[in-house]
Image 1 (tube, one colour):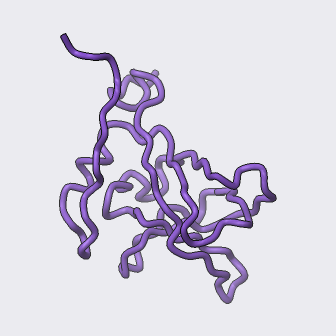
Image 2 (image 1 turned 45 degrees about the horizontal axis):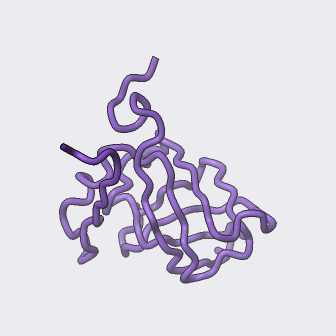
Image 3 (image 1 turned 90 degrees about the horizontal axis):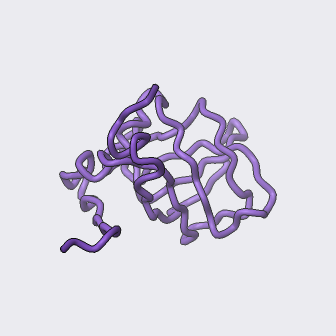
Length: 131
């Protein structure tokens, strides 16, 4: 039973709006997709790939292939997924938008400092009006 407030207890909660900053094919043939968000500015729970977030793009429906997903910093450990099988459209390019679903309540607090000069996440709250 999962009872974590902000992720499973309340159902689907939290979406991060990200952007592709680069795509490359490494010498080993693996495709790398770099986002403008990484482990050090909100995605800390990808450490050891414990949580496999779902990605939605404006190019969903195009052909897909596996990708290593990494963050924007120069830190070599700013990689979200290397072993977890992430299928992303092969047509993704720099500037494309990516939504990371079900990010829960903690991603904003994980990004509370400007690691390597990247600003913390901007948080927008929506829901029932307060009386």
